[in-house]
Image (cartoon, rainbow, N blue to C red):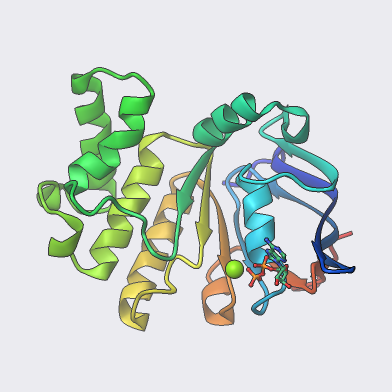
Length: 233
Ligand SMILES: Nc1ncnc2c1ncn2[C@@H]1O[C@H](COP(=O)(O)OP(=O)(O)O)[C@@H](O)[C@H]1O
Ligand SMILES: [Mg+2]
């Protein structure tokens, strides 16, 4: 169910890169919001500004201009430490390349963020196993990433993102390293998680993937374009 309350509110956001004598507008006056419970795809070709926007939404980088309210918090007014806290609490990241620790088991990978949160071993076990269960991998908890298929590795990464119970899952090309059948399964899982109430923002260059979302935002040359009859101004 989509709530009216926006969990992401971005207003007039710009990011510039100075290259030699020229200024490149990686993001040019971008405004949009995402409601709690929504599943939004951000689509654009290579170089359109998707990763730059993901870094802003994920509190990994700061813009040159603009406002960002994340779950009611004014992100760009925060100091570095507070920014890291907000990032850890509010965002579960899912990357194209999974970013699992190769020497740790699936369970240990999912457990790691919970250690940083200072939870007891018993609490960690309950949460990590429940997250692995949600992605259908409880029986692979003891496997290392090399003992898992690409699709399974991405599901472990999704379990790790879920374990912190963040209000938003932010995925950058989550199926980009997977074959199309496995990619579809991962997308199905993301749709299922959205049905369970997780807000999902998925970044992709692939319209077939974007179409799986409830809403599509198109980005081109750092600007947001209209899509599906909705104009984002
Ligand atoms: N650190 C950087 N320094 C200079 N230019 C950058 C930097 N990061 C991205 N860019 C430029 O900003 C634009 C948007 O890049 P990016 O957000 O990575 O696009 P996408 O993820 O859609 O491929 C591109 O023209 C890219 O070359
Ligand atoms: Mg990119």
